[in-house]
Image: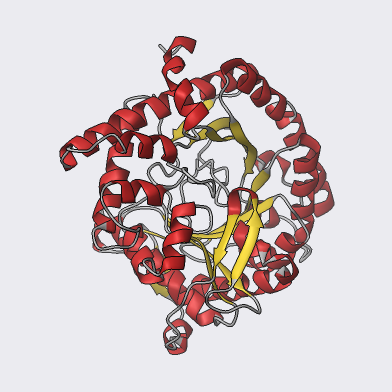
Length: 452
């Protein structure tokens, strides 16, 4: 049984190594908010979110003070809004985004996720209209995040949706070009999206989840790096064991916070997501962990192997510390959110192709990458398709969060602030793929999907 004593050994990690709880996310089902009148549905959504989550921020703040553990973000995820939009015979879908924004402002959370659609096998009622509304929705709100699942190991890849998302990402960036294209930084395209992910921008409350649930995402790249800094003389088996022990301590802290939040809010505890989530702060970088293993710079040959070891060891250590592990769980490699990744791009050791290779062995995918503003919708769609194929074939979650830097070229900078960070525009392969994307249809599910 966990108690306050279990957390005392992490005090030095908190004070010196940037250890924190990255997010406490309350998942809320909106299925009982459905109404054929969109205005009434929006009223129901606002009322339920405020009723369920009004104490989320104060409760997290009280836990922070009691345990001395920073909780960086307090967030809400909701049922994919496309499911509610299906009942409304209107094209004014952005009203849902405004209702979510109003609720987020009222309860004081950092982000609210779930302006989402699940179209891995095709478009259902509400899906198409919601996806088309994403650029406007993200341009007129500050806290709303959006995601679209376009593929899965069971269903294959919906290439019509992939082509559509290439256009949507470009349009979203264009509509927020005056704010460094921030809209695209709040939009994720998934393959095999998890239903209990607490991290933005991809969080939504899956249909198999309870009416309301608490999910926690931990952090701790700085802690792992500090441990490895003392690992001279260890072979890779020793390095893996050291990371496992460190991940256990980090996850134990997340489990304690999750249990306390669940008890005080009167909401079931869902999962702890073990993911090492970096920040732009110096010393809080997944890239620096890989370099601590002996690489001159992230992106050097050996980087993918080092990341595979890290991801696996984090999972093995974390599952021993929590009764319920879920979400994405592993190591994130978002470029603009990781000081080491940013430095690696600037010095030329890390390119888009190497990042794609790395996504085959880590938790998510091509995340928070600035690309030239003149990149075509078809090239963006091709990047999405390639990343989805990695997820589909390997039965893992992959995602793409690209930011077309409108009006900017390779080497220019975008700055988003906060945890989203900022960084240089990366080079993209510009050989055309228009005919490939125009084929449409669905890439069939792989043979390994037949497990029944």
